[in-house]
Every structure is written in structure tokens, then in C-alpha cells.
Image 1 (cartoon, rainbow, N blue to C red):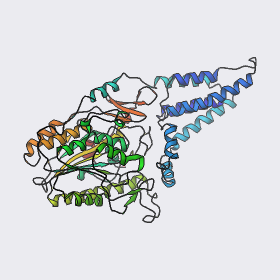
Image 2: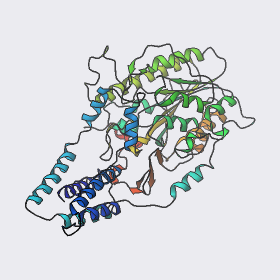
Image 3: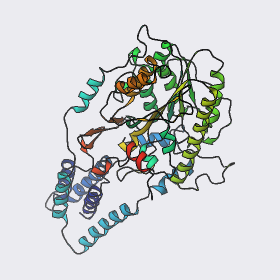
Image 4: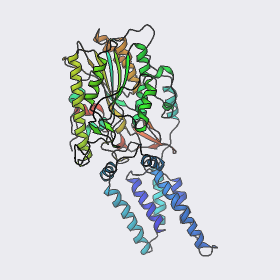
Length: 521
């Protein structure tokens, strides 16, 4: 029993430290199976012991993995075996060393030495092991009702109409900036103070849930903003015609554009955008890369990308609606070795801080160009998801398989440019309700139906009155996280609901960040 005592002691340590979410039933059955004595009186006792061990070890390993917060083995295998998604060796090494936990290793090592010492001194640990397994059951999984089914059922009935018959033609451009890897929690753990940037938005959503922790689903959800939140599996199916944002804007009188500051090849991102935008071919760039992504694909300057699009849009007499996706903040972003000898030399948070400053600086310069151009334009700034810059004790930094609120609560703002707004101090309206993409569609419809350039007071009242709340529910392919009461609950793909510990409640929402600023380390 030395091995199994070590197994369960180590598991108990990791469970009570929050590194596992171990339950009672399967652990009890496994412990019972390996603890039943097989005496010499049993025929072929030695063979039976070997067969039991041969069966129990792989079962124990599979059970252990299922109880961690790690991605499924199949997900990891696919990620590293597919050349299209495989990270560079330098990035993989940097990720490994930054997430090394000496306390976890120390606890597991202590469990091993206790088991070994007890065996040598003939101390029976099995009764203690049974008690620990029972204790894990007391603090283990908690199951809930069919709340999630009710949520998706009610969401399927909600929609916002952007192109009602008889509505006016737009008199301003609509620029949607979709940002990879930026959450309120990331901002709080970066030393760069982004408050001046966000204070210049006319409307700021401080409690916006991106509903996912990955780029492609986030883009699909945004491009289907006029309809209520669907499940992760449902967004990969065709939606009703009235759900497609860019198509609605096209019918409303816009010339639409889809624009990326990257090649869009990874994960079929570009093809997904084209399918959900239902519009013109992707806008073609003629630029040199500014950085490289984790797979060494190109990342272009935000300022140069937006300027190149703006130059083209200015030649059109139609108002423009653009979906712009930027990965300048992506965790794998780095300069090439021809620019920086060792692009991974700086700690991740330092690199993120640098890139955040560059990104916001380039957007500010683009916004300044919008102001001097005199164009009427409404900019909607919305991140896809956070970067998991700091991580949590349940999920390491950079990992986003479980869409914790630290990843999905993102800063969303609407900024208005043109006559009556340029050079005028902003009297920002903050929306702190729990909202998601439907609220953005409602705000767009309000601005289109009540132009902010004709009667600003009426327009503002219409925008604030259009905001519909959405319960915080976030979902990836293998995990759902939902707000329940004052805390959050989590459902792995093949398991029941689990109460998440209180420290998963986000420390930094938008209100706190804007008031207190970046966290001081």
C-alpha cells in the first residue's frame, strides 16, 4: 500500500490546496479495490495482486487527471501534434518555467516521504487514507439543477432588431475593435495605467461578460450579437438570419469591411469570420509585420492596419461598418530575433505591459486621426477575452480552458467622434449591470435610431434604456462557469457542477479598476 497511500495523501494535499476537485465515490471505490487484502490462501494470490495493480494504476491516473483543472489529454495532444497550432519551443519553455509551483512539488514530495517512512516503520496509514477520502467527499462536487438549460432556453427568445422597416439611413461610421487578450484582471495586474484611455469613452461597460475564453467563439458571438446567448455547441451551427450583425448593418445602409492585423489562419479564424460576417472578402493588407505570434505568424501594427483601411474607406460615399480583430496583446506575441536577440528574455508581465502601452498608444493616434478628419464615427471597443495574465491557483497563467471570470470580464466601451464630441470633455456614463453581447446590439440599435449627432440627450437616454442584462455564463468546449448567488459554479464536460472557491470571484471589476488603478506589487 506504499504507492496507494502516497497517491491518496498527495491527492488530499492537492485537493485541500485547491489544485484538484476530487470527489468521494470514485476515490472510495478505487481505495476499496486496492485496500482489500489478498492473502496467500487465495489461489494465485501473487498473480491477482499484479493484475490488480496493472488495472488500478491506469485507472488511478485517469481519475487523477479528470480531477485536475488541466485540459483533457486529447486537447493537449491535438494542440502539440497539429503543426498549425503547435507553439514554438521557446514559447513552450517560457510557459513551463513561469508556471512552475515549488509548493505543489514540495507537498507531493512530503506525501511520498511520509508514505515511505510509515511503511518502513510498519505504521498503517490505510485508516487515515480512508478518512482523507471521506473528507474529500465532504468538500467535493456539488450538483445543481437544470439552470443552464433554462438559461439557454430563455436566451433563445431574446433578440435586438437593427434594421426595422422604415428606419433611417446611418449618418456615421461604425468601427468595432475586437481585442484579443485583455480583461479587467489583466489591466489590474499590469503596471500600465489604462484609466486615461478608458475614461475618454462616452459609455463604459464595467461588468461585461465575453462568455468565452477563446478567440473564434468570441468572434462568432460578437458577430451574432443581435440574438441572445447560445451554447458553445450552438454557435457552430447556422443561426437565424436576424442574428448576423454585419448583415443587419449592411441592410441598414452600411458598406461593411472585415479586417485583421494577422493572417487569420490559426484555428480557421478567417474562414469563421467570413462565414459569420456574411459579407465582402477580407480586407487585404499591404504591410510588413510588426511582431510575430507564438507560431511565428505575422502580427501587423494596429495603427498602420487601421490607417490603411481608413484610407480606402474615405473614398467611399457610403458610411462604413468595420469589424476589426487585433491580436497585438496575445500572450504569444513577440518580436523576431532580427529585432530582439532574445524575444523571451523579459518576464511575461513585463512584455504584456510593454505591448499594452504600444497598443493603446497606437489606438490613441488613430483616434486622433479620426478627430482631425472630422468624420462622424462611433467606435465600439470590445475584447474577445482576457490573457489570464496572473492566473489563479486553480488554473495557471496563460491557460484559458476554464473560462473563469478573471478571463471573461472585459472592458467594453463606446466612444463617439465627430461634431459636438471632438475636443469636448467626456461626461462618461458607466454601465455596471451584468451584460453581454446583446447589450452591445441594443446600444448600436439605439444609436442608429437616435443619432448622437442630432439630439445627444435623446440618444444617450435611448442607449441607456436599451441595455439588457445577461446572467454571467461563460462556456468553452469542455467547461461551463456560471454565476450562482454570490459565487460561481463550474461544470466540466463529463461531470456534475462544482462550487468554485470564493477566491475565484474576481477581485477587479471595471469599477474597482477605474477607481483604484493597477495593482501595486
